[in-house]
Length: 618
Image (cartoon, rainbow, N blue to C red; front, side):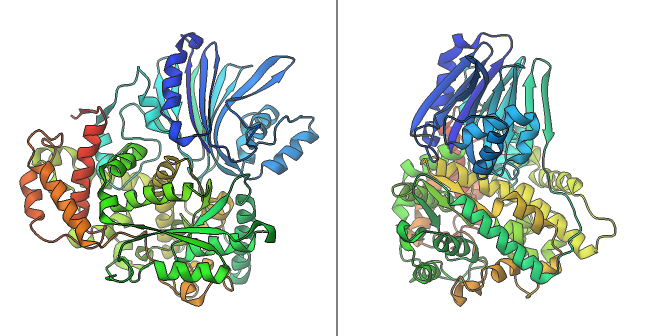
């Protein structure tokens, strides 16, 4: 797991531009604390920051493959290919000789053997740039589910690329600008594939490959969600899910560094932890698990619309059941509001967020985990794959013509983005966030392919799963990657294995909910692995602090910003209306609309102060 950057320009001699490439590479330093590398040729420069996970000595990058002293190809690579051992054995059969034990060299030689079709053979999470010296072309690739990020900036005669926007923005040719659509994206809980919030900076879509050569840029999809008839009965379906998860976990436990799990006490992370514990050899000792909690949260927990129970007791029960060595990272209001950590969170995300304590706490959790482990396994994305959210089971929300998570979160205020009311009135009209959300929703729906004669219920549920797997999961995966890699921690996501995603996507809704519950198939596949209390627990999202001092500190900081005429948000917000809103008590939940408004006021201010952003609004 690493940070990658690169520059291709067919009108420049890039060996003379090494300083610019090194600035881009330095911007990725937190993603790769173990080593730095730069490789240059006539019209290409590749940079790399390494987090060593496999073949700690031999896997240095950028990596090249040579023949008779001539470089054939060079690669700057981020991620893990979980089937690299099988591919290496196959490639040896074709006569390839390997000088390292890394999956990086397997990717390089797979390209030399199979050309651009090589990507269809890779199982894993990855994002990389490969320069083919023989044909003077760059091949950019991103994994099927978009677990690993990859951004690019087209130029007149080439392209800049990086793992994160900050790597591109570090280049002297790229202005840090945000246009109208970029600001709209920053203010909505929607991540549109292929776009970023920064003007001129794009994201390679998940499951896509792009070629850049003298003829220009050509992008194509090598994988997408496709409808297929599901013919397995219930028992076969459950057994297939169990077999897939077992194989996935076996592959994703491979590393030359310590591996742990992130354990919330929910069904997904508990299943991952139990399977990780079962898959360890006796000489490896117990699996380590980590959870985040807040001071007094368990003792003083108050149920809300999103959460019925606190996490800690369930996480402890799972850890005891499977014999995990469990650590709780307990945070207080002072840490969650510490400017140092909030700036670190913002720098990791490159964007403002209304999720406040949920992002800062994740950032701090990952920092604590990194003191003990380099790789963590997460239950992320199971809700999107198996239908775990409560709104999957709410007929009223399913019938609402918008993204279901927006309908669920904004239901009490008429399905209108809660930030609209606190924007400067003229800006709110110009941005038209409700119209933007409608447009993006219908664009996404237009992509969905259906089976002929599909049952109306299954047709609508296919749309719901497509929206979650191509839009909402991208928000969550991007957040997790950025916040974890800011500490040099690799987080693996077993439920994002494309084989599992493809199989479950085509299972009828009646089978996915065969026991009348959410995530019926995971519950059945995990039977016998977990305490019954966890197997039967209802979905509880990522925790949010209910600490009263935290809410008071939020209000205090927001008041400072709203009463400061020189604040960078002064022309963007309706300060009078926001101050009126804060006269009423904020919600306990981080999902509450007023609390999200306050969090966004602070985050916007931090973003505009911390980044030299030029807003280009029309």
